[in-house]
Image (cartoon, rainbow, N blue to C red):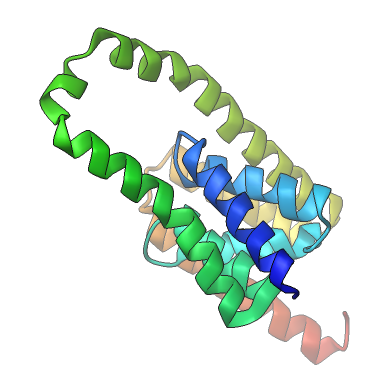
Length: 186
């Protein structure tokens, strides 16, 4: 990576982090738009894998995702640049809010602004879910489609702990990879 690419990585992550409301899944979809669709620094399947790792790792999905994307495109320096770009905006914003927290929490306009953003955030998260789900379906691997459907069913209808679901899916994916390797199938 060239010096200007590190600056571009920082700028993108800083901008996404500063203007993204709704949590990690929203920023992950925007990261996909930037790094997969626009810049083509990462392919779609790899981004899906990075999101899975970021989601299943301890910590915030946005921070984990930025570390992985930064590392993928620029090694350790890329990860460092990416994480600073991601954590700096919330740090600045939360520091400013903490100074006048009482005035901020009782402000009618701020409350209305946050309430008004909820439908947009929900729509963005639904969009990410659909995109990731369609990517799994496009692979035409019945095994992974079944895992996806079962994971949804046990999470949504049976309230199974998400950590258990993620770990179970990881184990099932590992067994499937070993099976395919043993059979000599790619």
